[in-house]
Structures are given as structure tokens and as C-alpha cells.
Length: 154
Image (cartoon, rainbow, N blue to C red; front, side, top):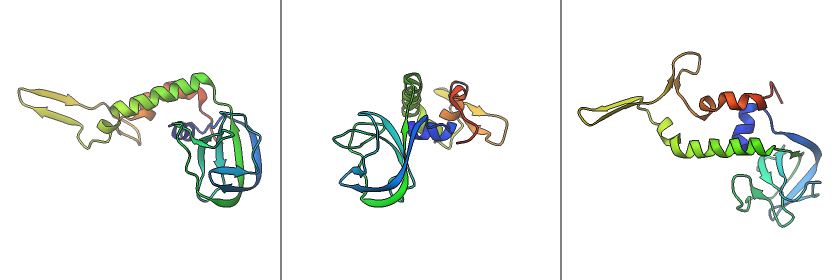
């Protein structure tokens, strides 16, 4: 979820940039970038592995969980960007992930109103104006709280 939220707000909280010719083999990046244990990083310029990951000396993990990242072997010229994500922002990302888990399926439903006579009735919240008029998703629900972290461009 962190990668989707960072992309949405155009902010990857980049603290250091390491451009080089990298090799990914058996789930490890070589040459090893100057990252701290447990630090998140954004891999850019790869044909097969672009994304946000967490660095460990024992292996790279996916950002959303501690599972091995399952990186595909390749050689590429690209950039490893160290990230310095504030804890308060990570708390918000966790809250967004929980919201998506709870309401995501409903926001993908084609129905905006459902009525069963005498039993129940409901209507999904919608945006009524603008180019994106339609069902509200996490980008709408959390927009005001994400704005403080938003960048105009990368």
C-alpha cells in the first residue's frame, strides 16, 4: 500500500539517491546500496523489479509484509532511492490499508444504490462533481490528511 500512496501524493520521502549499474541475483542487489537495516527504498530503472521494498542484510522483503520480495534476476542501470518515511505517515498508510481491506470490495461494486423492499436499503457515498464524479475511494476519503505530504511533482 505504501507504494500506491506514495505514487498518489508524488512523494517517496527520498533521503538518498544511489545511481549505478546493478545486478539482482538470488533476491539480492549488487553492489549493495548504502541502506540501513530495515530501511525502505524505491527501486527505479529496472525492467522487472521497480517498486518499494525493505532492505535487510539477509534479503530484501516486500514493503507491505515481511515476505521475501521474489525479485527477478536482471542487470540494469538504475537508481536505488533510500526512503525516510515518517512514522506518522506510515500510521496513515496502515489506516488506509485497513480502510481498503474493509471497504475496497464495496467501492469496486457497480451498484450505487440497492433496495430490497421491506428489508433494507443502502446507497454508496459518491462524488457528485468534477471530472472524477462517481464512487468515493481511499484517495477521496483520505485526501485532506494526505495533502500535507503531497508534492506537486517528483
